[in-house]
Length: 425
Image: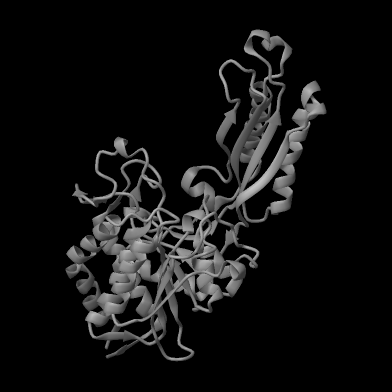
């Protein structure tokens, strides 16, 4: 079959499946799957993959195994009842293969009362599907499934292996999800994570470290406050120094793929600030937590040292903190920067498909947030992130645009056949 002929058939088949794609995305939104509680939604994904005739593997991560990997990020939840679901369409040995990966977990929808559309109903309004996870990233999961289903509905079979993955825990680091899949030996010659990237081909993301700073004060009754040492004031000094460090790094550190999207290469952000425990007591302690982002080419140890030395400089300049130095703890998310060579054949093939299907040269971009595509680098698997248009990810009134969801599925279907080759069934 000529390339033009099969492409026309596949594109039409995806378009004809628009209603099914919308309904599938809606149904996934209607099954709440906040990270740590993905089990019920994964049962639905398992049924989908089985109904498509795939060889299905439903497995829970082995914590003792995955935590041995240097990229693993620990989580508080047990893995029991939180499986990954993998569907495999086998192909010829040696033929190019592909993983279409998506995460089923979402973040909290709170404050629910602030949404104009109910977060767990998947309402369709103004050409958009609204709800928590509609964009990040149940729409992408649905597009992965519909891409392969449309290929098969056309009587075509990819020559190489195609692996669909519905994984857990991406929002908390991905160790029990995509990393566990790689460690279970699900490998391919390329992986696509269908995050909502508005048709950008994302080939890099920043390094990420979470940190916690603790400051000790001297508590005393508020009626004698002048005799105490308020931890809030001392913590504010640390906060201001870290803000200054953020601004200095932003002026000094340049990484064009990140700047292209948001105008900045790196950020150091304070996310929580807690101090004291009673209005009538001088605050005796304070805890501040933040996130440090850094770019490819920087070393994790070096940027950690930069934060620690900044805090130490504050302590040296303050009589109280010099005798009672703040402590710094690194916890949670710790990911090295990821940078994929965009000139490798897999990325070039995918970008070419995007251009052919959408009629536009794709933007090769980076993202200042973590992506599961990074795990491919540990397993000799080139990777990228690509997906539909949406907005308000992790915020109120999240949505995905339906037209872009259909287009994303069309790109994915054609990219599978462009990369893996094809044979008629």
